[in-house]
Picture 1 (tube, rainbow, N blue to C red):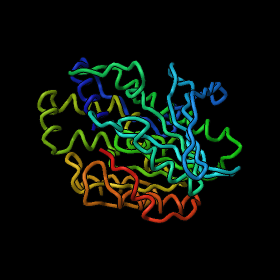
Picture 2: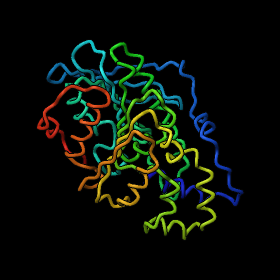
Picture 3: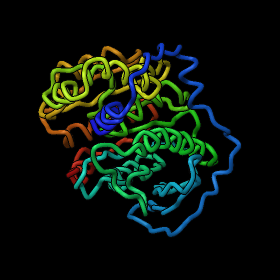
Picture 4: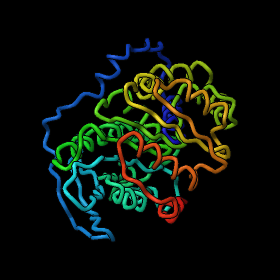
Length: 321
């Protein structure tokens, strides 16, 4: 929700303008092109060991938009080649895991099943970032685009490793980073499978929804400006990309007690996704639950060839709050 609310507030300050014609898919994808030869400049700050020979490296790499991307690289024991998972955390204000730590315990367990994981801090979670303030800070649009590109560079980093099997790369994104994953699914074809958790996949549909917050925003800005916003920011809307995920597979995980999202909208998002795909709904809140974590593992095991784990091991992972 964070992304398109800020986009809407940006539009309130826009002068009246004619609507931009929707861009063809190929043209949208071209907006996300970059120089893959640009140096990653990977730096290691520290390393700690966990049980079973798992190593957690505290690293950073260069962002295409300036600055550095803090990340954890979780590496199993052995030489590989391993499957690889790129994790993207949620943006829930006040959460102690609104950063790369959200999936860290899960990644350590999955390392025992043969997965290397890269867990990044989104731009808003990095040292020195100043939180945006109402009514709108234009940095939010830039930071969202930066996150998409930083994740693409994360794929570069993983595939540069000799112990990673390039045919077995996955992306797991929660909420804000599920929205990011919706865009990545259409532009980043090196990822074999996507798990998108509790995230909006259509900014346009959400802005036009009957949710009270959206109704209030439309009343504030006016219907014409809503449509202008949808046109001006369509290149950031995952709805224009998620239908082009194939041949990559997509698992959507949603909560029945989410608050902003509801089952009708979640099933609509699912209809936008290309095959092969699957949808799982849980009696949980926006953070999801243990059942979702197990289903996520089972999906990844089937899609990228992870080893067998006991359910009890994954159930010990701390709940997201």
